[in-house]
Image 1: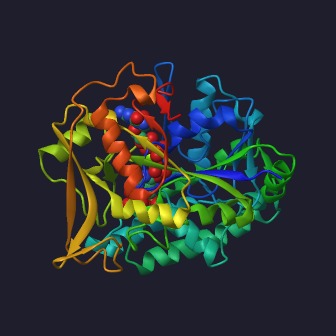
Image 2: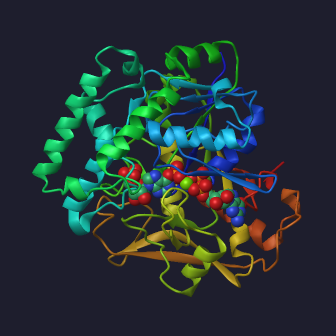
Length: 431
Ligand code: GDP
Ligand code: IMO
Ligand code: MG
């Protein structure tokens, strides 16, 4: 029996997971998403074209490989249909190689409404949600009210849908939310609901499976399976910067519940980090830069959300958070992306510990949201050169290699590869 490898984000998301999954897909037989939903935006670039995936795994462009949406994922049928149509336009027929777990939960239009209602009710404590209905849909899952993909085939699906919708409407009214003026993509709830219902036909074209049996059978047959994470460690519902997090377990443990594999079946854990750090939405971010350097990282890195288009907050790489991520996830291999964004920097900083009330600490404090944290920075020489055309890790500039070696030393985890552009071809594996 072979083990399942895992690839996940170690920061606050958007580390380049989609790109690395696409690059690694030739080494695997199955790519499986285990949590999250359309809040994710995974960007792939090759042959001069950019593709953004939200619900569909990032192995989909390799048509000979199986892609699986696991039970831990949330599916919004209308967004799913848009993704399928965008793939069709690029000549990719996902019905050939995409399987969907019968146990994956559905995001209803009113889940999206409840997301907006909850955010409004939170006032200045709002999370900065992507408003895709993630929190409310996972809430219904945990409260045992949710509707699952397999339920689409039941005769009473429509009645169950209406019962759930009515609950949401009552909740929204209780929160004082103005349902009549609420819009999804410029549409009223009823207009959107019509499209949502129509989109179920697209969803039903796919093979719905008992994915836990499927995955375990693949492992038994020594097929190679890669679990693709969405969001990231610091957005994890248990260990992230709660309440400024997403509503799922984004960590390695989430693979077990999101796909139905035993902890002993976990193999390599590949953690992705940018060479700096970003965050989109509200919540603490100790190394955030509010100055020209922060703006430069945003501009040079094209740091605008792949799902919402919002500018991402930018700052230096945060080693206390990264060490925490390596510990919680059991990271065996680090992938570092986007050092090329800092090619013109004279110096590059790394936060190696936090200073809280005059005391240095390595630990992520429980009071992360409320205490003032001064990042303790170590400064490195910049490499001051373009990385374009470099095809071997060893040929990277010495100053960059020193910076990368410091990340390895600080985390105790080996770097497996470095990505130096958005393109599929620019990933340099370390020998
Ligand atoms: P994900 O959510 O982790 O898949 O990441 P996103 O797709 O949201 O954001 C990563 C962004 O960085 C995308 O626009 C990628 O095309 C881009 N990207 C990925 N790797 C690199 C890299 O090594 N260098 C540069 N400059 N951009 C990269
Ligand atoms: P990928 O997979 C970055 C953030 C939102 C918000 C918080 C909760 O592309 O890395 P939610 O919609 O889940 O209720 O939002 O989490 N967030 C992400 N930030 N990348 C993502 O996904 C994210 N998915 C959610 O901005 O702060
Ligand atoms: Mg993203």
